[in-house]
Length: 199
Image (cartoon, rainbow, N blue to C red; front, side, top):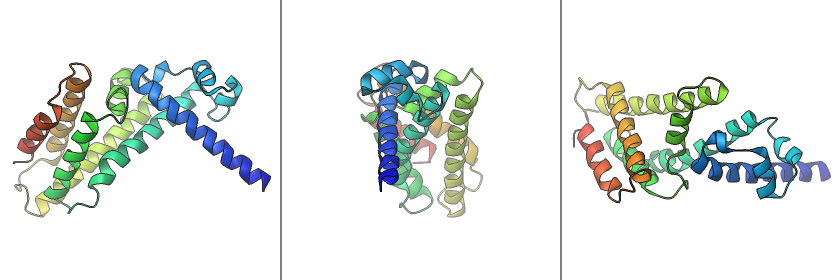
């Protein structure tokens, strides 16, 4: 019984560290994470914090993974049960914009911020961010193809172009919300996304 309890406690501690790291990194970037700060905030030793991750880079990767899981829950999971084709694309856009305009992360879209922070770098963290963004663009393009096959969109629709435009609008919406404090991000972004989708 004791080893299992210890393993469960270790998982809970790791999860708590990642949750707090997400909040910090959302505002200060993944480079803003320090083992010392987390140890102080969590009332743990530095060894206790780093032990679950192996290094600062390991902590950054775990934080990114945790943020992606939150994003998936808030965006994809909310749209996944919509009818494939244009209805699901519209559901994705609605969930995406609600996420961007909400308070899910203190500093706005975690992936957008991380993309800007690491786009000019090399290494595993940058590769993980790129991989997550590439996967999302492929998912979007796949949904567009489904909409074309269903007759919801014209046969000559370029799925990659639509995915690119939707993502560009989301990035712009995050900037408008976070940098400029815009209050009308949701209706403006949805209107732009609907134009891209032919609405």
